[in-house]
Length: 204
Figure (tube, rainbow, N blue to C red):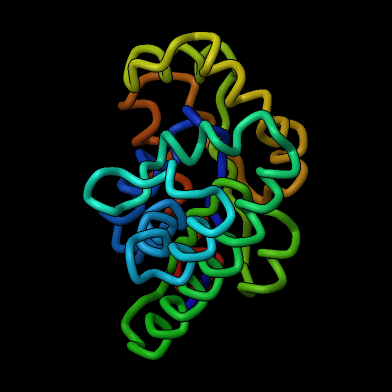
């Protein structure tokens, strides 16, 4: 089984690409989904987050209110560092466990690890065979965040500015998927990506 890292900035279309790859037969392990699991009550990051950021981050039902948590951390580098120090190791552990379980099944040729903040350490730690970057111009990403997620434009630009730059992401890329066009164009580009990924397997 080949494990491929998939990354891209907010609004780039990682979810669309991972869904298209899943339709081709890839097994997808998504860090964002795991992030929601580890902060759920009983999850490994739940108590540490409440201890660090206080009960103000909790919703009435006792779950962590993700917007409240983001508001508590966003804009404060020390708080963001604490948030990452609590959540990232927990997410990484679950992701590694799931990839091991997929490999043990023996029927998965390509597994895709979707990691928004993919870095060199993930390449080594997860044994990634390649890094795929979903890329689009900043203005396209801003327009999508405003139109599809209802995000105020200023917030969209702030979120993009807080992430790694396009240049930093592209420096890690073994393959770039341009998602600046239509859904039909993206589907064709993912078809080409899938052929490339299968070529990594040596089985066409």
